Image 1: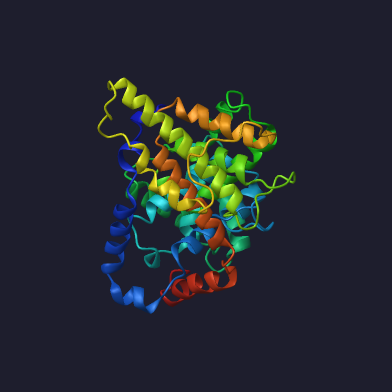
Image 2: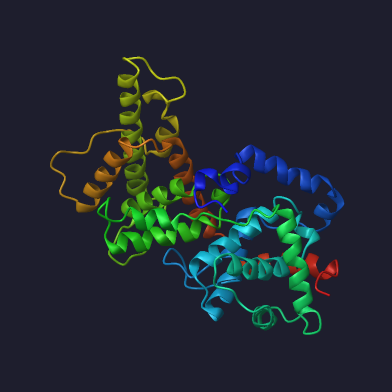
Length: 356
């Protein structure tokens, strides 16, 4: 059991590049192209929303699937987050159309509760599942089905069950970064939302936490504690990009000084922040210094955060990509249709007899 993320199985075995993830998923679909063609599914982000969506100040106040069970059983957030990671890992190894996703979902929650030391009796969980999906969980077989699926999950994940989440980084940095409780609450919601993307399989938890802090600081446009409906507002996006560009440029300068004026191989040069430039509106060049007379306390927090990043060795390019992915997700969320997604899942479950 690795208490240290850097020595953990999560870092060694469950972080991938985007190309690696795409190749793994394409390989699974290529194993049975007829099955894939017979049962088209929504885009991956919509599937993630369906499985993982929670009541969040970011979006409308509804809760589905994992969150519904979590609310009924008053489960800890850490256990729900771990369950979501288990589902993502499992479906990198198994094609979703070969499973009943509701069985996988309930089993992931059951296993995560045991791992996060808030265990639930298997019969209690089975009874709750039956209230949501009565045709999928019949009283005669539900407990045995969850037990069998538990071994299936553990096997496919190679018994790598310890999950490090971004929440600890967020809370530990609150004082150091001068974050108000409302900033922490909003960043916590962004972390919740990131489980509806591929980010848990792409980047370390501390990078996710820092990105969430940045978005909480720059994207909250009012005092209600809510992110805007469309997160990609020009002002917020420009502020996030400029803060990251400022930190990246400072890191590059420090590397040059440490190398005797020569750019250290492997570190990005200042001009390499094209990812940041692409995120900015044309009138807001990345890395532009903040005006001396700025009176905006929120922007002062952003600049303080950028200075903190400058003195760190955090991967700024990774934060850029996380920012882009989250903003893209918020835009995608607005097109999500729960009814259509649910019907497409139920169609292959019933047609293949996976609800029996």
